[in-house]
Image (cartoon, rainbow, N blue to C red):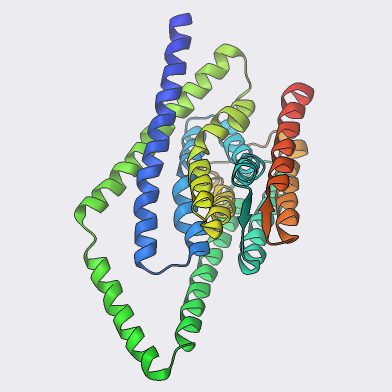
Length: 335
């Protein structure tokens, strides 16, 4: 039994490394393509970077649901969203001292993140999350992406309108030719590495869920707890790396946009796609405590940011303390 236990721990660690590295490869390619297309930093954060770094959570939730461990799937999503905001933004703000954002990004992406959390909880009130909820989630995410594309086009048009007529026409021509040239220069190697990253995520997430379920059984840990903490924090390491490094490089909109976009993707797609395949049961304690906690930390971070369009070191400490309080109550008081 001890040998099997150590083997599972080894598989868990190796699978985490595979997931993190695969996500890193995938994100690098997505960010590169986004940059070549001239996508703004905040939109790049809530789309390419967010989707790429959220693939471990999505993969884990999908595999868990398909293998009959849906409690882990829901736990990974809710736990990751709480950790992303209270843990990752808390750690990043504390150590970097400052994360700025724009009013536009906060009002648009922050409100969408909050709305998706509320919508999830509403569906949880009605019992199992099924196909109706899945369709609603997917449609909402599609509309959100459409609005982001529209926003990007408006931003491009506004930038062009600020230039002189002739200069604007010349700039537009040069810009279009430049984009086409860059897109043509994308080598097959980039596509291959993208596929390798995606394959690594699939394999790594499968191993992650397997080892997590088996360890939980041996140690007597409920699947929901494994999902909320062990796997949620483990699969969110890509978000931590991207958010922290972005903030250190002064890419503040990318840093906050990555977290907001990840949380939206986790719910709308991370739960939406698995729920479309089969009903996902809702644990009473998850409805009574975990989902409200997710909404609370989302509101908290939005209020902290809104005071000055930034997160300070003090704000980071508040967020980290909030996560510690949540973990203590969930693990040792509610169980």
